[in-house]
Amino acid sequence: MNFQKYIILFCIILLSGFHCSSQINESNYIQDTKIYSDDINKLFLQIDNTNFIKNNEYTSTVIEGYTLLGFNIAPKFIYYPSSRIKISFGGNFLTYNGRENKLEACLLLSFQYKISPKFDFILGNIYGTVNHRLIDPLFDSERFLNQNIENGLQFLWNSDRIFMDLWLDWEQQIFRNDPFHEKFNVGLSSEFLIINKENRYKLSMPFQNLVRHEGGQIDSYAKPIVTIFNNATGLSFTKFYKNKFIHKFKISSFIVNYQDLSPLTERMYIDGTSSYSNLELINSNYNLTLGYWYGNQHIAPIGNPIYETYSRTNIFVEEPIRQLIIGKLNYQKDVFNGINLGLRFDTYYDLLSSNLDYSWTVMVVFNHRFFLKDINLK
Image 1 (cartoon, rainbow, N blue to C red):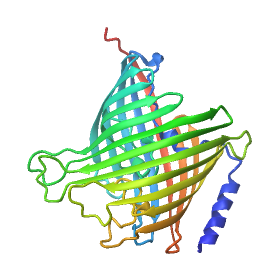
Image 2 (image 1 turned 30 degrees about the horizontal axis):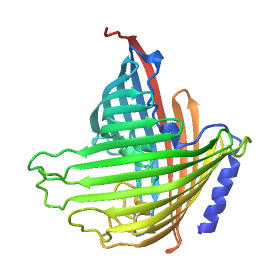
Image 3 (image 1 turned 90 degrees about the vertical axis):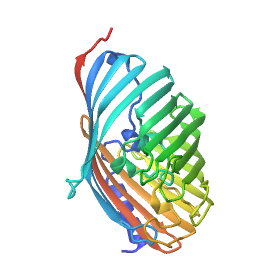
Image 4 (image 1 turned 60 degrees about the vertical axis):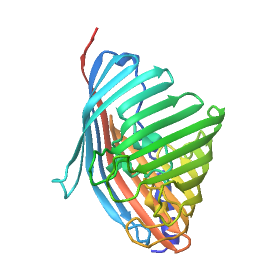
């Protein structure tokens, strides 16, 4: 099937579903960081569960195709001893169908302190993945499925005009003579509201930074220390509509930078500047995204590898310039209280190689909190 037929099929799917009623946006998977007065001195059991299948039909030389099929579940006890403190303790369990004997399990412990009504400090298990609100070339949204646990520390600022998320995610700890690097990510994701005409339109400026570091002072691993810096600066304009076909029209554009800050670099490129633009049509059913990516020597270790200009799996394969036409169609529906069904279809057409890559995702997300008892420590 050629590219033009895919576009026709894409439009038919979009138009056929415009009269349904649901909600689509990755913001539905963003966790609520607020502490509510009604929750003080209460103990809850919260269960977060994602069942997923994601099929990546990639045929380009840069990235190989693969399929993810499995589930992730995180039961947690959550206690609010005061209006400023939230404590949670539990575990996270990830497994893939067909590899049930390879269960990935870890403990979760989080302490959140509300320094002020707009400023929060989190230590331990932090609000990660899609909560950072980073663009896909910097931070792969697939990590919500297969690497959704982040531990370290985090500072959050939420006000009417400013969103700011500063965090440290410590992926891998080392001790002396360990045969591997320590690994961590430091990020700053922010968005500044410039103009806001309520229910009409708004203009904002996102500013995103991410540092990936591998290596430490007591590191005895033979491979060189790696430090990669990525940055994205852009503008985002949203127009609001009151009709059943389009609720929001959003256009955004970013300049994306990459720099290799390693003491001894082994990568093909040490820096690069790219551009990333999107147009979104959003209603209560769907989010249709049409985008363009111009990649010039782009490397982002935890970004979506389809945007990179070299292959992570095929040695000596590189495409210094990449130009992609991007089409994404998302559907999402709350099928029951706390249960959300999501469907996603993504396409990436390479203008230089005339190659079409695509992926489709089906997932069911369950998030629910069960009240257990009142506990007053005073």
